[in-house]
Length: 449
Ligand code: MN
Image (tube, rainbow, N blue to C red; front, side, top):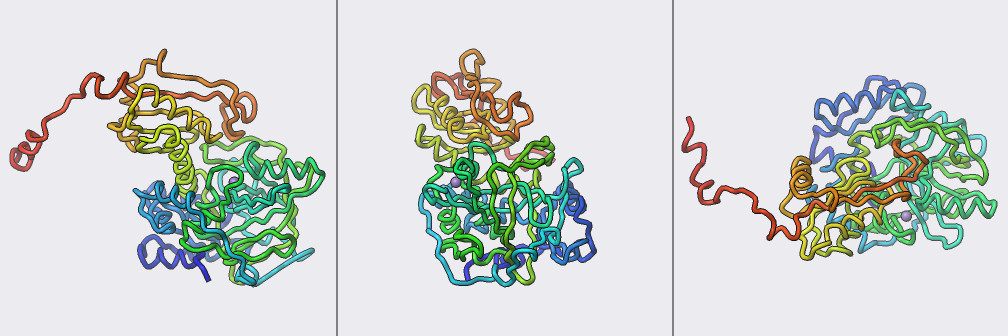
């Protein structure tokens, strides 16, 4: 059996025992799980949390699985090298392998046995419309081409066999659904909960619609992802998942969804969104229900690594001498390049804005600026930018419906700031410096009490 959430947690326990915390006291899934994660975060503690006793459900809850170091471990990399290693995995996918059986099928419930309300009903933030599933990875196939897509989609509980599902307009699952709905057909979907972090990272791969996220998962793991066939459709799901909800997104049906506290830091408003009719539940006998603490580090570190890798790839296609890409805040990108010709700064910015619909503001700096230090980026903006020359605003582009600042859902303007020195770093006013030889001589230990 390949790597799964349990084998990963065992690795964490071995390597960083202090990162593993079991909560024995009964917890209320309404707000208390998120509450403890947020309190820990304020104290700069980032443990994986297993809640053994959760009110109203027989299932334990696991949350806060992701940190930058733990994600690096899961993809056999280091925090410094993981963006490059993620890109390598995208470029060298390992296709999945179908196996006849797996622990995800230990218990299979269909028809009237399906009852989503037995699952932990986790409410996260005070403004949320109700309990949500935040760790569901969707597996679906293009109704025309059969190409598979994986994605994270938030689910709001709506009854024993019903949830809503948030499909971002313009993204791949929405594209599949739009084709199915136009043909008057439901779109089969499998929702996988309880995932090895390499599956989670792979699911968040951003690329062309034909790129199969399962191949990236395999490349991150270093072995093919083992998959089993669903009970009620031809979809394949990881054989070692904790829980699988099998169902379909029916055409023409919408229900109230939201508000829900998102990665943006806002509780986003109520909309009419698609639903999932769940036809079967497959799970492990002793299933752990995974939660992702949305809008906090558990969520943010997970989603930014694949975004940064994809943006790095896109910028590199335009400006081969790109040195780093970072997503420091929602909809925001910093890029550093070793500029070889005038205009490459703006080209790098345009590559970012043309690659990821979520990205709304981009700042490009020279390679002498450390983009992992926000203050240095502001310094470059302050000292190397002439706004009338170096800022470009793009109007009426597709963005995300999760941006609270737009006038029309999902339609946004975008800003590109070329904060590179012009005409070149070499010809620009020199930075002040202290000679290395002097610095070496002036060691405070030799001069101060
Ligand atoms: Mn895709």
